[in-house]
Image (tube, rainbow, N blue to C red):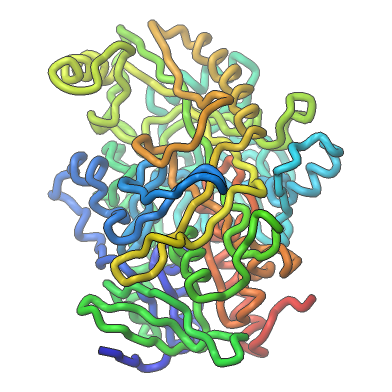
Length: 588
């Protein structure tokens, strides 16, 4: 059965962070906004006391995350490989339902730096032909001065807690001295150090580094944000990563925006609405709305004057390809734009065991921790080391759940031996981790799988991706620095899981992070980018695409702060420019 809904001014596809931001900013501007969410509704009350946290349901069975049964991806390493469907979203875990990944995120709200935004300019100045030929580094088409105010506002929305390192160009005594200039301090003081955070902080200082508290979206004190949403102080319960916050402390679309947005008469939303395409006018130059499959299996057309794609980045790319908006990227000729510059983000680290120390693993919050940026992109000269990029090195306890605990070397992987090893190991370990940049290459890209389709008959997204040699060299350098810190801490034993130079990407079983970027990148040239500087499609002026799919490569910072800032930046352009004169906001 085919159904046609009443028309709206704006349809927002996906109701995570970016969708919630676009929804409230455009509804407050007087536009009639309707959001369409593929998953179910998820309310704050679903995660409130006295309901217990369930590690098996949330961490192992991924209760609030996208299931491959509903939308898998196929994966291969290169053009010559055979892509097969992911049976488990191991390397990354996408959110599903209202709130998206913003519901289960860890809450680290680190920013990129000015160098990250102008990486091509930096590379041209410092590397002068020394980079690997397959790298495809690009600048973001905006400046730090343009985007920082929007990161600052998102800090206020989340009630970010942290230590300011650079306030309006003046380096502070605490915080990250290598960060870009902040227009305002953090809204709230940093979370308290756990034992492992304090130990890492002391070791880093003794070694001449500049440790600071991980910027946190779990608030340290009672807080009311600019939308009037009240966020409660974190009680360090240990259930953050992969969980909705039971204490209303971790900023999420629900706690920070959605309860206020739902009160706006200009806004409504529909769940179990699986959007399968963006529909276009006959001339193909603009969209008429979107088509989705509802819970009953009906095909429903939602007319709209403006279409906002705000799903997870990988799904944004899939929608653009299935809607034939923008020319698909061809890695052989390097023509086309949709699918190019796909990147993930590197993780890994060291596990340190201390027989006589008890770390009280449940007394933690996801973003509790201490970090150094001494080896961030552009901080040190890496041209002589053979790589561009960098990493943040940190220590944190993102969760206290037993099955996620590190176990001593030699412990069996299952059975009675595993249980015995877990009992002996639990509470006696700390970690030193990294998040590393991932450069875009000619051959890492996204397209539609020619074989596999979902239950609606829509082609799956095919991910062609393998680790980048430039980045693997970076990881070997970071491994050496991390091992020096580990030895300084003098544990009884330690081990690491840093990638080797001959490592290849594996989509499962081990989780890395959910920081996928690229595929619908922003830029100044429609021949090499899908979106202009306002996240407006070059090929359909009333289609705007939010999310990390716009990043031309992935920096070492967590992506959420930049994703949110870009959404605010785009919403501002729509309100102040597009509504007055609908059409391309950038002409070339």
